[in-house]
Amino acid sequence: MMRGNRNMGNMMKQMKKMEKKLAEEQKVMEAKTYTGVSPDEMVKATFTGKREMTDLTIDPKAIDPDDPDMLSDLILAAVNSALKQIDDEGKQTLGKYTNNIPGM
Image 1: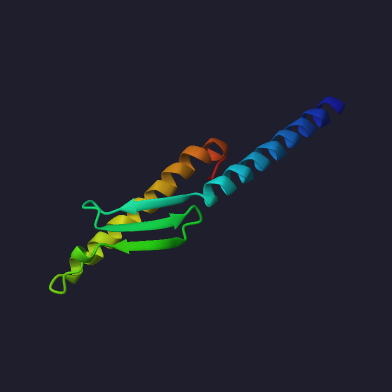
Image 2: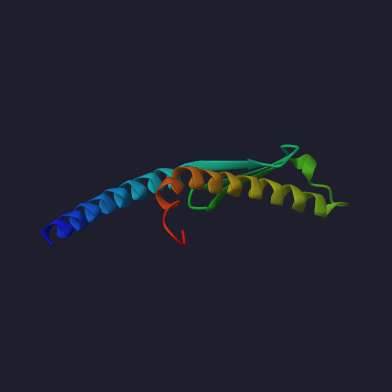
């Protein structure tokens, strides 16, 4: 019975260590910036790792009053590009902690 308690204690210590490392890596990731760019580089969207947009740069050539849908498409492409970068880094960095946890 004592051995089972010791194993449980060790497992809890390992979980606490892992939880601490996960929180540290998450903070590092959240402090980074990610810039997504439209295919023609006319629009750039910058986000923090917390998925907050901090900047949106639009080349004046992208503003065509006769084709507002083009600008919308460029913005969507840049935003989605940045968000994909955040997702990819999250999977790579934080995934090593959550891959074996059901429901994560």
